[in-house]
Length: 322
Length: 281
Ligand SMILES: Cc1ncc(COP(=O)(O)O)c(C=O)c1O
Image (cartoon, rainbow over the protein chains, first blue to last red):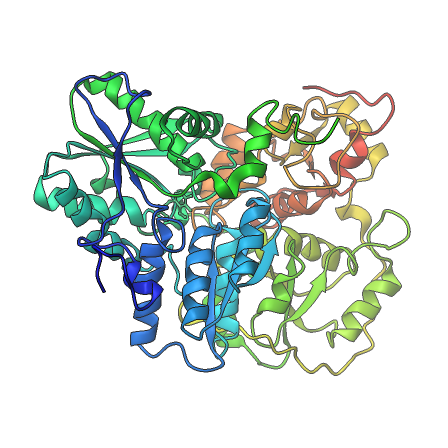
């Protein structure tokens, strides 16, 4: 493989790593902090389109190495879409299958994409009433399949499997360290499974324990796919509070409006979780004044057009002939 | 530490594992998500569907005595069996099932503490997709014990007379009328709010972080000391359609041993639609 010429023998050689990092792009018009440059790490510049390529690859390789995937036995995984899309596309190219368990509220684009890349899909009605001990409907159903039909399914389990965070310790962290030449002072990330924040933070802190790690999360009742409010974080076993300095709770509408601003002012076609992270970064720029920030932008806007029409008034106006 | 008033109505997952397959022990799974049973259940458990099997399919009511007898007969259950109920959402509908079993006089019915999620997350516990082979029985139920059930006239009387604990077990947003039903739930009412004089004690206050019931002392402190449920008075629990109310009914009647506790299964979908009924927000 040749990263310079970008010629590859198979798509997996393109996956990001220290020698083939996803790009860091500076925010120009929308960052008022003259002494606090902000760089967005564009995780959608990766073969299957999101930050989840990293975890999916690590999880899949681990299952292969351990001989868990044999003819007639595929994977079952709870996903808000991105992990499923990465895992299914990788799996099909390597001769395996994936049953993706998704909550009904994820965008239609993601459900269709899952089917397009060859996942089997099981959609469950959304969480009924968050309560202690209940966990999450899609996680419980995936675990049920893996337990009741172990001959048919193995559960990669992105919410509990340390390989998820390890992927970021091995790739995202070293990439950022090298790309910023060690200058990074603040890392901004969102919380879903918490694989991104835990793995990246652990690596960067091993290089410089003073790096501030800021996590953002949407307010309760949100519809930002991939993210969890504190009240839903109990299922994310990879969450390690000691690896995070601040958790900012941000009005979830801002995820969509900030994403739109990034699209229209910076040419960065960022999705809603990136929008939320950007809002969090702006708050810290105002608070800390000086620094060198890196924001991990998980995916781009293409899968969220339906969600955007719910949050951006007038967006669908004029899309039909009069 | 004091014990539950009726500790025999609750079994732990380990107890269930040890007693699996023993004669006279029958397991029934009842879920909110009616697909969960099919995906995997405790070996030997049968599944009841709350929408199609536990409610009368014509009028709004619990199933009739004949229908209950047929349901249990077809499930191979005898009146002398020990029946263990469990389900998703912290045993919401299995608590409703428990209430129904008691109305029709089944002697020994118990809830599995923590429900299906607790079992699912314990490594030593199995699940299967295999449907058990059933030898049908001729189940004979008792005439219904309607002492366990509050109907609208009694609720209106309790509201007016203030001589009874009315316990609203819905979420805070439902109690205050901000929403009529939790998001995604189809059964609703004409108006939001609560029955005047009702005490708000959301059902989930009764369970801990792992979904199992809190201790008798904790429960007494919450319901009696903090929320003012008077143990000398009769009590009526209500929610939206009667499933969460059954959960609290179970707590008040069996775990705390309050004297006369009823579940109002008409609940808010009935009360909140009655013309002229008093409502508070
Ligand atoms: C769009 C999007 N943003 C953010 C995240 C959060 O990443 P992590 O799960 O590593 O915490 C995810 C993960 O599912 C995602 O799909």
